[in-house]
Image 1 (cartoon, one colour):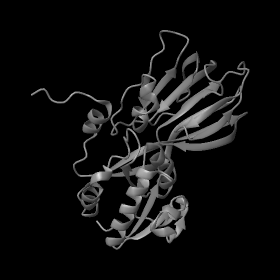
Image 2 (spheres, one colour):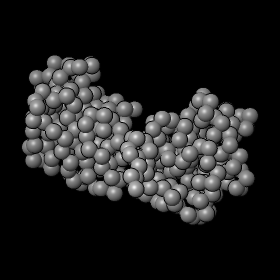
Image 3 (cartoon, rainbow, N blue to C red):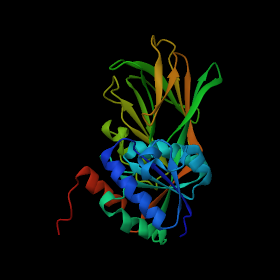
Image 4 (cartoon, helix red, strand yellow):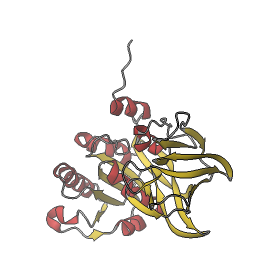
Length: 291
């Protein structure tokens, strides 16, 4: 497959990421690609002679984007690039790397497979969240991994009601609620005791955070549902909604939080030998075959 305009995005001021960025930049130049370099890292490449570009500009021009860093870097880029339907490849220079699955020590072979068309193309849905006050939308944003309603202070409980497609589900007193996509089911949701959802599932996991009842459990619902959380006016402090732990929206007592599928989708490209269950075994330390 011919990728002529390739975005290069990365983790700035990180020694390991910088080594990979330099090597991938040279690799793409050898391929004859027009390399579109993110402005945050342009000064670290090729003696600073690259033309710096914003993520939005890369999204408008790129056929493919390569993100070097950890899952956090991938999430930040993915929210922007999904709006432009740009396919994304992740090179892992972070910790776990569920989304950045290319090994930096073997990137050339794996990128060769992708450029030769020997790859897997996978689409992941993302979420859109609105905060409403008296029926008016006060703020909106998107999330790849999860949307989290939580208190602005550590270890403070809050009260809220949850509705799915306008059906009342439960009221709860807890530290908050995680609404996770399959992509995000191996992130914050997993730490909170949520289930792992395979990427092909069209589902959401609702995971209560430290609920004040022993009967509260995570629930998996259809991803085409609209989730609505009505925050009790009895809460005395301001609350927050976090998108992928990057973006914070203010929530006041009495506000509503509405979550639904975003019309944009994240397109990930993997080398042909990619296997999701192998990723789980490797990242989570699961046992290998006995026989």
